[in-house]
Length: 238
Image (cartoon, rainbow, N blue to C red; front, side):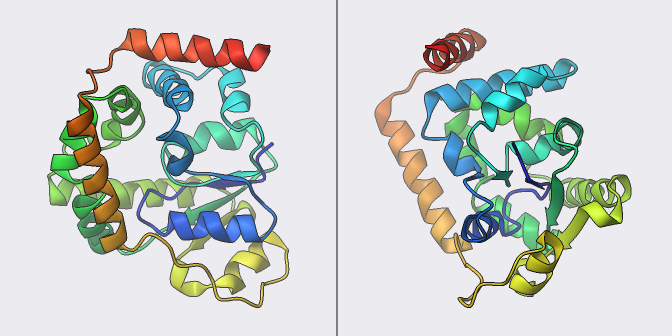
């Protein structure tokens, strides 16, 4: 069962927040890094994204997606913050954020880089990324003004929709204090984590692009997602 829901988009310090929540015994914390290496989780989140785009998500999918996790941050889960709030009514919500301008520069050069994104579209990750991330921006991820407006609108919607006692608006530079006060836990004596700098993430994404290009992975389709979903479900049910 989730105790913490991260509503902040990727590249708002979510990797560091994941590490922080793990250190505060609120892990394991779900993050995109839990999804990309695993075909069954890619298929599961493809199913979630498809259902969300066309209507409501089957509540059983949330329980399956977060089985064994106590918290979640980053994409793809932050896309579904409203549904997760309802499904986990006792969970607190953290909106990680930074200035909209610096956020765009970061995502545009790393996880939403046009060349990397084009490479990912040709893989089984394509439908998962399209239904859980790309649709948030109407596919206009090269449009700086549009992306910044989408980011700001998302943050405004989260703040206006969530009661103040259930929400923390948080920037990584604030460190342990506000986070631990909000969660009601003692602050560790070690520094607040720092992970996935822009340069580190750029290198990771470029390496992923090269790996995709060299592997010759076939383009994904709904049939792949459904087959992997059913395979993973069968394994879980055994």
